[in-house]
Image 1 (cartoon, rainbow, N blue to C red):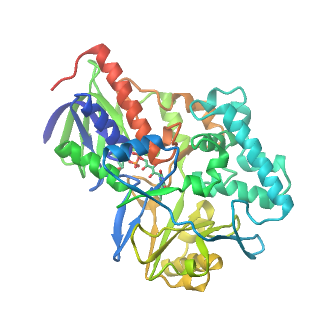
Image 2 (cartoon, protein in one colour; image 1 turned 90 degrees about the vertical axis):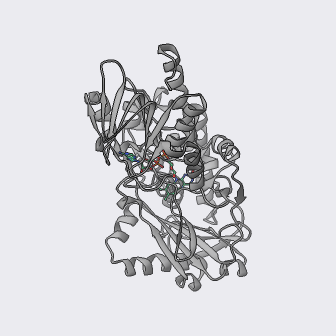
Image 3 (spheres, rainbow, N blue to C red; image 1 turned 120 degrees about the horizontal axis):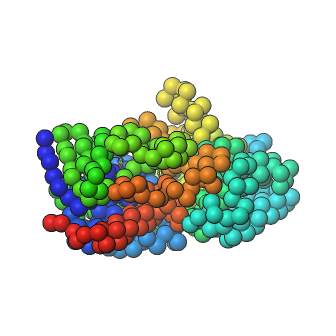
Length: 460
Ligand code: FDA
């Protein structure tokens, strides 16, 4: 048994937990971080597979993500732009491949007009409702009790426009079918990126990458924390004491007594930890209404970025294809070419029902419908499968089921006694993104510092 005392114990060494730990340490508090995995970074994970450096988890940075940019500066990390020179490809619902330039899908004039109209309506809602407290808006209940798909269907009968608009929030972000989440949830997703127009603009939302990989954010934060980060230490219980403190037990006979605890894991994993006394009824209920989506992030590496020779950027979209989005994901300074594609929600279910070789063939055939037959012959092929990761269980992040956001949202960030919650899944700005994880880390650290400053000075 190893027993330690700290001001704050942080559970989870993803970007949120580590940035909370960083701010608390900078302010002079003593901190320990318990991490379940044998690595830090959580849903960011930069690894080398068959000789290719791959971003298995989160990777892109958009211009509005100022908290992440500040952290990259502090840690001495550089960014580089995603390759985007050349034309894009759109595959129509009938399977026609259309090469186009600019941001408008090359759909019929009517469909493009309908899409622009819908984007305008959602942008107006986003501007009015915002990301901080969407549940507080007078129309919250109305917008939270209709599915995004149904709401779009009430606005237009253009199915192609509906599929394309859905793609950006459903398959592209929440990774759930558009019938499974509310319009308010879609508004939150867009508001967290500034506007729906930003969300649908891949030049904005997928703007830059971190040289050397996004996981370095967590690795460098963990380096600073040194031996205060404990790996292979899944927290199993949080016991609250009458004096207001807590004891956290983790595997490996680890025990930490602390004044506050930061639960920096996605909400779907809260029930994996025993709380004594139990969390309040409302938290138990709320957490059951928050779930992660499902997406397969597919990496295919080629000897050369062959699509560039055909004048293509590597970008492809289709609301009806198996792989609904594909991008050039070639690493900084790499001669080989890398494509990344995404297979979401029910399409991912169908793929996981297949043997691995059939799944690979189906996915590569879909990418080939955007970029040509050479796409079927990568030298490295890898599928990020976060749904089977014990300490994540889905991707990219959590969202409420229909009606959950206006019902529970206001309590998702509220501490329970000494227990604080911090993760990208409950962020406002940067929701579901590394930026939101870092914002939540900073916000949680500030709340703890305010709280402890009034009760007593830091120990140690
Ligand atoms: P995160 O899940 O990262 O960290 C939580 C940590 O807690 C993990 O390390 C976990 O092991 C640990 N843990 C869980 N239970 C525990 C327990 N009981 N005890 C101890 N430790 C425990 N974002 C972005 O900005 N740009 C992008 O391009 C993408 N793309 C993307 C692709 C894919 C495939 C994924 C999966 C995710 C993204 N994201 C993204 C999202 C981004 O990666 C995500 O929002 C952040 O990593 C969330 O950080 P958190 O620290 O909140 O949780």
